[in-house]
Amino acid sequence: MIQIDDLTKRRGPRTVLDRVSFTAEPGQVTAFLGPNGAGKSSTLRILLGLDRPDGGTARVAGVPYRRLRYPLRTVGSMLDGPGAHRSRTARDHLRWVARTHGIPVRRVDEVLAQVGLAEAARVRVGRLSLGTGQRLGLAAALLGEPEVLVLDEPVNGLDPDGIRWIRDLLRAHADAGGTVLLSSHLMGEVAGVADDLVVIADGRIVAAGPLDRVTAGYRSLEDAFFALTASREVAR
Amino acid sequence: MRPGQVTAVHLARTTAAELSKLRTLPAVGLTAAATVVAGGTVAALAASSAVAGGASPTAAGVVTEVVRFVQAGMVLVGVLPVAHESAGTQLRTTFAAVPRRAVLVAAKTLAALVALVFTAAGTVCAMVGGAVVGSAMAATAPAWGVPGETEPRWAGPGAVVVSGEDLGRLAGAAVFLVLVGVLAHAVALLLRELVPALVTTLGLVLIVSPLLGSLTEHARWLPDRAAALLWAPADPVLGPADGALVATAWVLVVGASGGIRLLSSDAAG
Image (cartoon, each protein chain N blue to C red):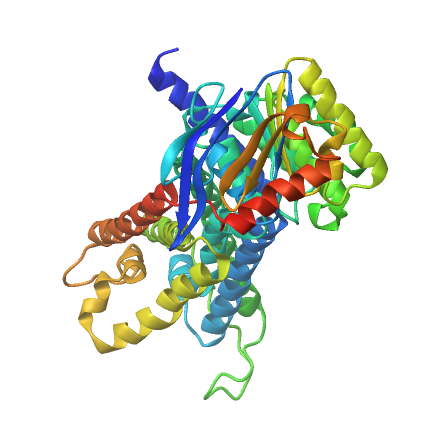
């Protein structure tokens, strides 16, 4: 369960998040949609304790992320790219992450196999392709067997097989009772997997709710997205 | 478990993770190895030329003569644990895995300290070895080219066996190197990025400090000069222990500022 309440973030004179509120429920895949620069990553960075908000709260499993002593057992996250140093191998990267939580080393090989990186375990991160780097980021997210997954643009750089694979993985995670929040600026990516939608434009939530309710009255998800985000642009 | 034990376990795990990062980052091992090799080589050359010149240097004498030459290696080993995080996007993985940043700063400092102590001890040992080997080689070779000598001669007995007093100065040289490295670590906590942290610390120990040292006696209060009192000839104002305290105070002030910046700021990357 993810609860975002009245989140505000300013950078200099610009308000990048303006009283953003929404929830992501267990058992559901929640898609967090918006054009580039709308505030998706800023929201997720605050949710993950990387940045501080100027107002409001973001809670995972009822507490702010920074209160969690061993957060990876509750929340697995991936922002764009592998989040790893280029001169370390994929396995060595996951091993240090595992050590922070006292996670046994064998779990590292399990997740490497799970994301299809068993062969690339000894390859240095700098030599991984964009898509393979994304898989490594996902492996780190899965390491602590968390209830909540937070993924920023997870299909960037993945081939069609990879996109289908990640959708199946997220669907299975939600069906098993987990919470999934994934951000995207592309509609087609989430159409087949999302249960709930949260649409953000220009730092404000413009629509939120079950997929069918948010898209009611539009021909497609894409039409809904453009209409919702465009009305915001016009209102500006 | 009591709250104290919970925190202790957390710190131990985070420190183990930080040590694992250092072990698997090629730049750290290479820098440490290069520092040890450079120390041994420079000491061998210095001892050899001293013996060839007719002197009988002690191992501690050679080490204190050349110890400044390996400061750059210690600075790099000190800077890398923090600075490598900012090369790319690893820092956010670190913050996501350890959101309690006070624990993170403590663990990083402990891990850096372990790397620095090993490197400094290895370097001083290599210097002693270099001094012994260099002087022995010079002693058994004809000393050609010594001014005033027309015939080759066998030079003096070479570096002497280390005495108790020497051990104190050798330990002082090792602690000096650790302090220089820890200062670099503190600067890296404050500046985070590799290049600014390197430029600042190397600029201080290699340029500002020698320059001010030749201009004013107050230069003794600079961190590297104060730490050097652990092995250098006596200073009229500060003793060796005072020097170590002054250097430690610098490290604490710079490190605390860096720690506060890390605790309060947004994560880059």
